[in-house]
Length: 193
Image (cartoon, rainbow, N blue to C red):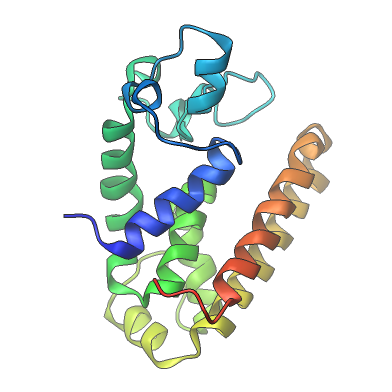
């Protein structure tokens, strides 16, 4: 059911959503959060300054109000990522390199905003819906160039967040690190998605 590109995208996203220590173990797969180390392993946080609210495996309660975040297992989280972000963001209709970056944007910014970033990068009409025109253009252009244009927009967006709400400045370095690493990752021609 899951494609190689999706698996690559979700595992790469976990490096930012959970942390560089991301590793699947039986405790992580079960989504255990009874101890401090278990919470760290699944990225469970409930930071009052984070607009996403309670989060586990990077799945934010504020964006997924129907979910019991504390009970979420890895297989359930992966299904959420596949249905609500990969498919809903039309990543399955894009070239793999662009799809991996676009998925990260869907997770980090929401599907609608990520779709607009993609459409701006492709220089097509911006309506926030990935349809046949957007998908076709994505297949015609140089995928690394498109990824760089998306990264430029995401970086500017992060900076606008902080300019409009200085309390969010505590997250800026992490956001910029994420986008710089995604830029390097998707620009690497040796990556085969």
